[in-house]
Length: 253
Image (cartoon, rainbow, N blue to C red):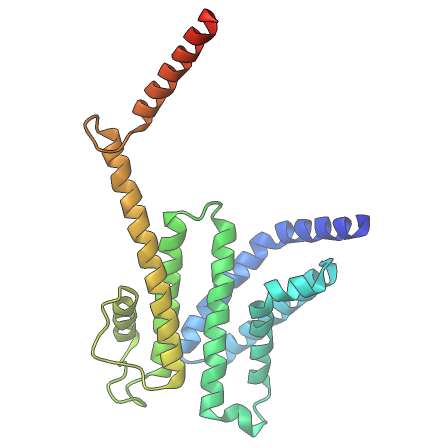
C-alpha cells in the first residue's frame, strides 16, 4: 500500500514536471495535423511528427510503468494509447493494405479524434476552471480541426459537391456546430462519422450555452430590487433577520 502511494506520488510529480513541455509538444502536434490535413504532408513535417510521436510514446510508457493500477490506467487512457498506435501504420507503407484509401481514411479519422482528445486534455489542464473560456477555446479547436478533417475526407476533386478549400469546410463545419446545417451531406463513411461527432458536440455546447445564458439573465434579474428572483442582498437580509429572531428567542428563554 505504501509502495502504491509512493508510485502515485511520483506519477503526480512527473505529470507536474512534464506539463509545460508536453503542452508545447501538443500544440506543435496539433499544428502538424492541421497542416497535413489541409495542405498535405512534407518530409519535414513527417520527421518532426515522428520525433514528437516517439516522445509521446516514452512519456506514456513511463506513466504506465509508474501507475499503481495498470488496468485502470489503460481504461482511462485507451484513446491516448490508440493515438500512439495509429501513427505506426504510416511507417509500414510497403504493406499493400496500408495504402488502401479506406484504411488510410480510417487511420486519418482516428488521428483527428485522438488529436482533439490530446488537445482537449492539454487545454483542460491549462485552464484551472472549466468555465466559458474553456468551452469557447475548445469549440474553436473542434471547429478548426473538424473543418480540416472534413476537407480531407470530402474534397471537391473526389466528392461531387465537396469542399473547394479550407474556408468552405470551415463555414460548413461552423453551420453544423450551430445546428443550422446546409445542402451538402458527406458521402464518405469517415466524413459521416466525423460530422456525427461534430453534431453531438454542437448539441452539447448548445445546451451549455443555453444554461450559461439562463444563469446570466437570472443573475441580472436577481440584482433588480423588483425582480422575480431573490438576489444575494435579499438573501443576506433574510439571513440577518433570522439570526436576530433566534437571538431574541434565546434571550427570552
